[in-house]
Image 1 (cartoon, rainbow, N blue to C red):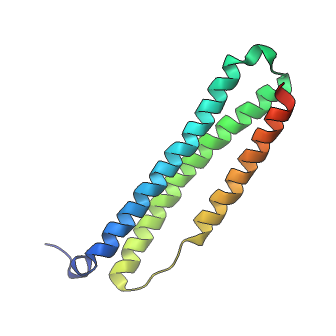
Image 2 (tube, rainbow, N blue to C red; image 1 turned 135 degrees about the horizontal axis):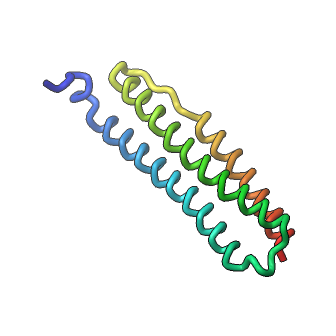
Length: 119
């Protein structure tokens, strides 16, 4: 049997699901960027320095961890919003956005250091 609150807020639940799927696509993209940059580096390995090796590994690992954390945080946010919708309250999840922005800036800085030290 369907919960009456869930039936009453179908549009909000569908929007919540779309938002969750957007976060999942973001996580996959973050991990993909790490994979592509790491793969490209190891194709050009003969001209790169040892510092560049360390930096690109940091980018690869950071992208993988950040992507997995995005999966986790997106799931937690989805479940909290689902409960909030049914209870008639809403809390924006700005901490996820701030965390991702800071983490992506750090990865971009590491990538800049990589480019500076690689060729």
